[in-house]
Amino acid sequence: MTIKDMVADRLRADGYDGLCRDKCGCRLNDLLPCGKLDLRCRPGRIRYGTFDGKQTWIIVEPNSVRGGRRATLERTQREGIK
Image 1 (spheres, rainbow, N blue to C red):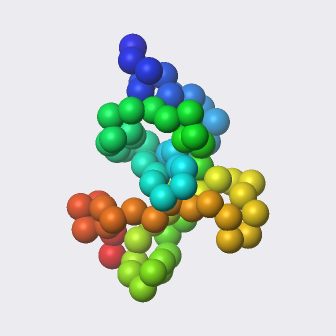
Image 2 (cartoon, helix red, strand yellow):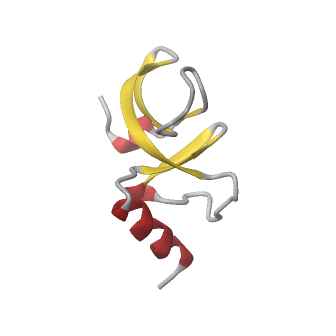
């Protein structure tokens, strides 16, 4: 079992959808596409909507302050989100 597997298992067990930090985020089905786990990565939940004028998704920290950290993702087309 790899670190990535352990992180994914724990996120699922705790009801999270992925990880987020500053200007990046990843979903469980594509966890750690950057290839590394950063200590600033935090568990988060997915939100769908229009951000910066396009339909996409973001991973947000569940207890973040309104307007707090969120990870906008440029992989909308690849994910097939409409």
